Image (cartoon, rainbow, N blue to C red):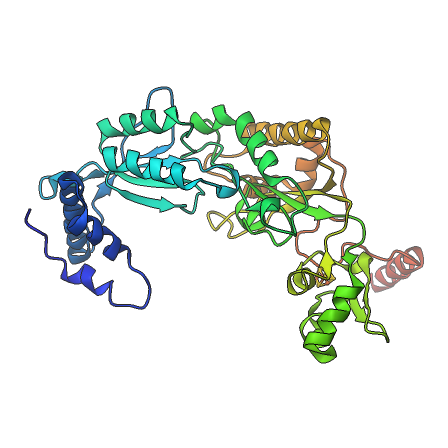
Length: 414
Ligand code: SF4
């Protein structure tokens, strides 16, 4: 095998960060299978060629597996005659398990299947939340899918469809979790599998589930339908643990690093160094709970908030999700059914009313939140603020007198 010279790519290995070039070279130089060595050699050759000519040479097309309309990102090379071994280099998006829990056996099994049918390049996990298996020929795409499907893996979403959902690590490993993230994730995905595998929506639609307001899935920023665990009673305070914290770190440290950093000034220290929480003003920013996890925990009346419309740039700039349901209990079967029903209603409305290539956040911006809520039969609520901590309450005492004065002024000016 003649190795392609890659002087420009070599520079990418010189920085402080691990380089993807080093990873591809490792496959080229050390993999036991000559097919993988040759494929990655041609991949590096094409990439170097791209850097030299400042031009990308991958084009799309149509590649799918039987019965599916999405889940594969086709990549055909425009310079396939120069780099024949990587001329078809499709990516398969495969759904991860809820919470990204794998056994090492399972990871090994996936790696072996991919080395058998693909290039050996994998990303755990791409921005979409999927396992990205990068680099298969059209023929091997079906073979690889059949093999992993046999042991339980399925393709994720690509294109204008319900996309692969994501959930955080959750209550199995995190003390802040307020809900069963993985159950929610699984129910939503199972219910919308058809919409995921057969793209038929105006544009993409993403579910993300975070177990607490730390929002480790960045659901508020990145999900069209964000489910975020929260609580509605009082935060649980273990005063003994607070006292131990003060004894170790000192009173000043607590004041400087916890109390004064509460964005709503909801914390104070009593004379005896016990902590006082003004729960009505706590906005669940999670700062104090993260700093003092032994002393502070979420309350015991737990549930989720649902936010709609988070997304990155596109037409009208970045948007955070807007609260649609401030608090929903998720304990009984009926609660979960209601959640899935709500998601169905939202997606139906999106499918019927969004313009092509418009995310649901943009659609709401265009038609107005009031109309969206009206269509979904959801009552308005002061928690549905667009920006956090902008007060949606307006005092209306004496408004009549003020209005009379304003009319008087207007009349006298006229
Ligand atoms: Fe303040 Fe945030 Fe703690 Fe609530 S969670 S008390 S807002 S620091």
